[in-house]
Length: 318
Image 1 (cartoon, rainbow, N blue to C red):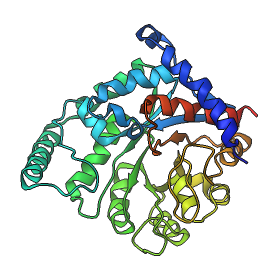
Image 2 (tube, rainbow, N blue to C red):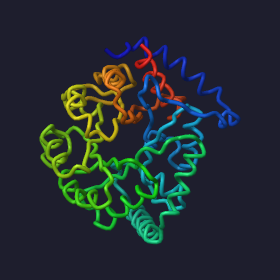
Image 3 (cartoon, rainbow, N blue to C red):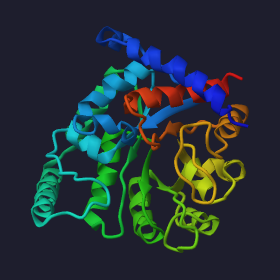
C-alpha cells in the first residue's frame, strides 16, 4: 500500500525545508532522480507557479533534483522565443476582448511556427542538456479540431528535440489521423488517458486503449495512473500487460469513482505498488510527477513537486 497520510506528512515536512534552503549556487549541482533503477521525472505542466516565466522551470528542476523531463509544447515553444498566447484560465467564459487577444496570440504563434527550423528547438534541448536534465518526451496535446499541419509540426518539433516519444491528451479520432504521421516520422505518440470510460471517442476505457494501440506500432500509451484509478481500472494489471507499449507514466493521487486529485498518500492510486513493480521488472519508461492537487496556502508548485519526489523516493527505497 501507499505510505499513510501520517507518513506522507513526515515526508512533506522533510522535503519542504530542503527545498527552501536551496540557493542559486546550488544550480551547479547535478540532479539525479533515478531510484532503484526507476527514472522519476516531471511534466513541466506541474510548474503552475512558473507558467508566466517558463525559463524558471529548469532552475527549479535542478533545485528539486529532477533529472528527467516531459516538456509541454507551449513551454518549449516559449523557451524557443515564440510569442505567448494569453491564458485567462481553464473553463473561463472569455469576454470579446479576451477572445480577440487569444485569437491574435494563436495567429502569431502559427506564423512563428511556420518560420521555425530544427535549430529553433535544438537550443531548447541544449538548455536542458546544460542542466544535466534528460529531455525524454514532448507533451503536445491535440484537440479534436487540430489541423494536419500542426500535427506535422508536433512531430518535427519532437524530432528536433530528439525525444523518444510524444505524449498527448487527445481522442481516438485524432489518434487515427496521427498514426500515419507517426509512421512517417518513426516517432512514438502516446495517448494520455482520462476518465470518461463511456465515451467511445475519449481515450479512457480498456477498449479505447486496445483501439489506439492497434493503429500502429508507433502508437503507445502515456498512462496516467491517477486517472486510471479514478476510472475504477487497475493500473498495476494494465502495466503488467502493456508495459512494452507505455511511453511514460503520469503519477498523481486520485480517489476512485472519478474522485478528486489529493496530496499523495491520501487517495486510492497505487503509487507505491506501481513504482515497486517498475523496480522489480526493470521497466525503463519514466514515471513523471504530474502535480494537480490544490496548492496549499503559503506553498508553491516547486515545493509541492519536491514533496511528491520525496514520496516516490521513499516508495522505491523501502
